[in-house]
Image 1: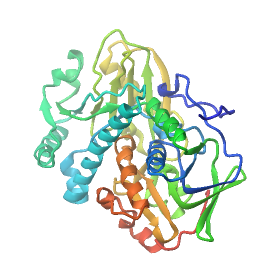
Image 2: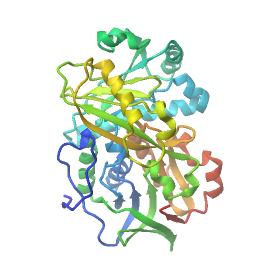
Image 3: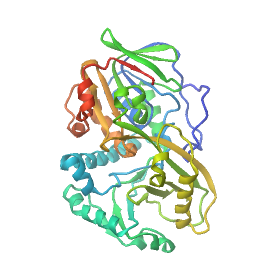
Image 4: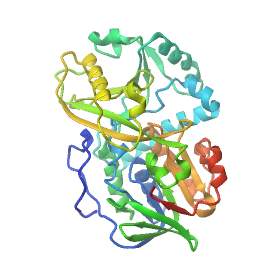
Amino acid sequence: MPRMTNSSPRPTSLWWAEPTPDFPVLDSSLDADVCIVGGGITGITLAYTLADQGATVVLLDAGHLAGAASGNNAGFLLAAPAEPYAERIALWGRDGARAVLQIGRRTHQRVRQLAQSLNLDCQYAQTGSLRLSRTREESEDLRSSLPELRHDGFPMREIAIADAVPAHATGAFDAAFEVPRTAPCPVKFLHGVALEAARRGVRLFVHSAVQTARWQNNVWDVTANGHIVHARTLVLATNAYTPKLVPALNAIIAPRRGQVIATAPLDVELSQRPTYAHYGYQYWHQTADRRLVIGGWRDTDFDAETGYETILTPKIQAGIESGLAELVPGGAKIEHRWAGIMGFARDGRPLVGWLDAAHHLAICAGFTGHGMGMAAACTLDLAELLAWKRAPGIATFDPHRFPELRQTRDGIVTLGVA
């Protein structure tokens, strides 16, 4: 079990309102088969998977485990991105779009399997979700995707707006669609998996920011808190923050801020099914105790919602509150406000695989706002790749689809904080 340590201020999201386990800081040098940098859903599920396969693993996080985007989001995972599927096919091709769907489906299976097999107290429940359109154009975009989704085994269907939102809010939307395989995924799940990983021998360290990493003598020497982790393989599970370690990624992964609020428990039940609207820029769901968690509206101020500052901005907060007023006439008491930084990949798909196989450097990052719905399956496949096996499920996420990385694929031997 982890020992308690002094820690930096806790995240302000609703998911951190209850007591959470704490973990030690790195205070000595260690050896490991694999060193993972980043303790969100990616790093935690990868660490658990590798330990289950017999590897010795050290995980380093600069703050709290699940204290960045994984613990500062709307608290649910989708089985597919909110954007119209036909648009994804046009952008990525059929194989690329289908791969994202399959990863989403497998992530749900993986999360459910972990929650059940580890007997985690994390309120996992598969509820399905809703897509709401604001305009006729958006409705047609979503309708045009239905045949393509059915072709690839994903049965999204149109339903009556009255079955998706309260009667007083139906006039704000043009159409509604129902999507299977969506579930809440709060911080409790991630901390539960982390504790189980620790029981399997994973050494997880918080407040242990990586300063440098250098490949020498056929191992990585990763420096944090003045100590060194010697590891044969290094994995970057740092999502938006990965370019700080690998500058070549600056043009490929960009930091984007998302803001969320949560109300006090409401007197009425709206819908416990997570809901996305306006091409996914608006989202909300109601928790089991009837709090409304609502966020997004990033499109109202794109230029301001960039960078690494986890700040709240008046324009976005006002947009979110306008959405709250639509759903709850008269408003509701707001008890929590928070922001998280997401890593947006240039083409919208994550980077999962070897950055430099010759020097045993891998990446799992750039989830473009869909890390909760994709990471747990990506890390299953990445574990296969780290064992030098084929991993067809993540083939279309190969980092070397970007020309800049093809040029550096055999020469990344030094990492450092920018």
